[in-house]
Image (tube, helix red, strand yellow):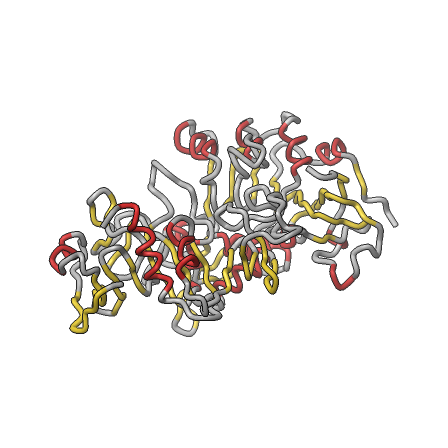
Length: 218
Length: 229
């Protein structure tokens, strides 16, 4: 698969996870592409943890970037039918289980469904922002990322970097396949037909459970 | 009615060296920029600052934006934030120069710890951070299991002074926020000994209908008529 196609391919598959009316939080980068691939009859309510429920492209009167950004710093406002809330309310909404899905990338994920993406000790300390709350509070946590980083596995037996949250991931979607987090480990349920099971396993440090019902990913 | 409106200079004079300062804003949206700018030129120092982030190294103006100015000037000794990724000065002063200490707290916990500080609560029990290094934070008082689920007990936060920003402020100090600028401002209005709000626009009593007041002016000590930034 061409490098330029990978992100769109992953985003398209993630979009198929969302249902009409879902409240969805999108992390920065790849996840922001997901709405582009939603079917016409699926409308989701985008939630930005800095205080927008029903976020979208700025409408007339709300173009001013001094008042309207999303959690990633992109220009965004509340669309018609949306609203602005304070940070305590926003995170109450998140922890309280009112967000159907959060979609985010990871530096490392592991077979226990844990994720690390907020700090590289001694090198980078951007902070966790709202990620820890989202991982704990959202009903479904979908990790959308490239399968490897510079050829090195990102799907590990156990994260080496400090956790963002433990036992939180529902599903991992990469350009190679779709993996569900189960009590027994990561179950490969869909595979990109461009790859063999052996190739996917070779790019994954965790031992994959191959679903007896393995389907092509499209 | 007491006149709450003071000048920028008077506001800065109320903030001493070493003060613990809460400040509203998310990447500088909803921050009291006029007060922050004046503070950054004051030479005052040794602040402990509590907010979501330290503004931006490169804001919408292409330059240092919001609290990033105080960091850049080495006026801050301790930062309590959820995210400092937009201000590399923080990492530089913390990890290389070792002149600045930083406590990172999950954003939702931070909001609730400030709310607790202003709402008379002894702390916050949250599932956020369980199993992570947040458990080792000086602001985490331990773990509790309630109905089979684990929670961290996080301390309430207080400050000497809160510097807030609202789009419309009436002469009582009642606040109305535009767009997503509300963020941390409402909780901070209750969690500091001295509350100063910078208004984009000062309006008359009644111009914000009582039903539409986002934060009561009863919490506000002083108003700075900042004007549009």
